[in-house]
Amino acid sequence: MAKVVYSENLRREYERLYKEMVYEESRFSQIDALTDTLLEHKERYENVAETLGIPWYFVAVIHNMESSMRFDRHLHNGDSLEQRTIHVPAGRPKRGNPPFSWEESAIDALKLRRVERVGEWSLGRILYEIEAYNGWGYRLYHKHVLSPYLWSWSGHYSCGKYIYDGTWSDTAKSKQCGAAVLLRRLEERGEISLLSATDEKGLFLAADEKEPYFFYSDSSEEEVKRLQRFLNTFAGVALRIDGIPGPKTSAAVKKLFGYYLKGDSRGE
Image 1 (cartoon, rainbow, N blue to C red):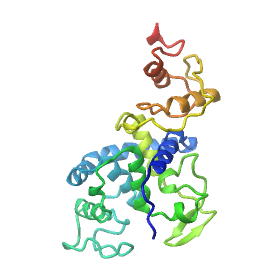
Image 2: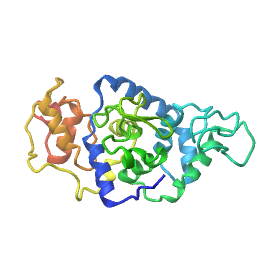
Image 3: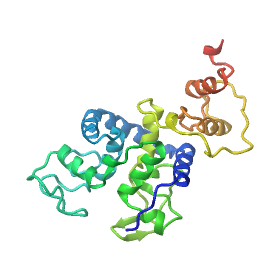
Image 4: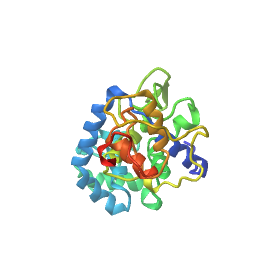
């Protein structure tokens, strides 16, 4: 399959989509549960990541997409570790004898994609490498659908997917949580920092966005979602867009503008 070359325009697109992303509200508890499970296995992901000089959370979200975080499956494609891979890429790992350890197979899968050569792991590059891992079919041949491998369970994706290798359906819908969604939730929970390392130059920011004035509250308001989207355009801010002007939104306002929302006791 043809390869999509990483570029400045592509970086900006990935960063904009990540910042504008809103979860499917009905999926939020599942997203949080998956995030908990990723964190439970963080040490195993770190061991593989350190060997290759890549971020642990890249390994983690790929593991969820390829084998639902099962440690008895190949990271290449979810085949059983009891034998070499059967599906594409078949016959992996080429060296060693089955059954393979998860770590042994994971390192082989990631080296096959040459991720150890990436070097620069900015937000845009991470999302690019994740999409590349799954393949460029969506971007090249079905441009009306953003890859569910990244965006499923968010407002960026509704339906359309490959149901088999090379077989497309406009009506099929991914049942998995997209990798970008899990990364965003990890960042919201303070486990990783992607937006803080993002260069703001050239990023999307609507010309008519102004600093809104809101009261601190635990009630959801539609207009607050606009505020949260605005705050998320700044480096170091990763808010869940839920419309609640609570402690995290208020803290973000303080970080950027020097004061908490009116009614927040921290500002009194």
